[in-house]
Amino acid sequence: MDFETLEKQCATCQKCGLAATRTNCVFGKGDRHAELMFVGEAPGEQEDLSGMPFVGRAGQLLDKFLDAVEIPRDRVYIANILKCRPPQNRDPLPEEEDACIGYLREQVRLIRPKVIVCLGRISAMRLIKPDFRITKEHGLWFEKGDFLMTAVYHPAYLLRDPRKKEDMLTDMKRIRAKLDELK
Ligand code: URA
Image (tube, rainbow, N blue to C red):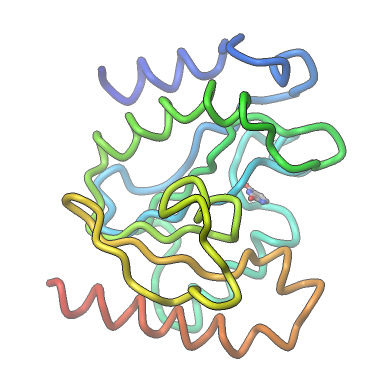
């Protein structure tokens, strides 16, 4: 399946209950040939309204870290585990993740990134391993088939606990160095 067909399917998806409450499906955005892909948790209010991932406060903080390590946002691809916003931004339900994960799988298959970065615990637990511990294991590398994976703190968490921003910068620098190494 190609990107356009997949995105169209996603826009009218009825696979889970979130279809009833979404304004927009947030498929993902960025370079379809990106070497680096970020995967967050689920759209928030601003994302639901705009249809774009990471455009609210958390997204603006992510942009700052990308700028700090000189990774242009339009050179990466950004998506989420869930394409629709859970009401009140609650955690995704397992059945919602199960219903939605096929879209992300297809996105990864089409983009074929070298590195996938999980933004936060929910994404890391789904994509790296179910018992992933973000405080202990952020910034570590995991080999998964054709690509490398790592996880960093979710930017929304950094807004709540700014002391973790230093760790985030270190991790982002490591990601930048890994991309340079893989060239
Ligand atoms: N948080 C996420 O996990 N994803 C978004 O797109 C926005 C906020």
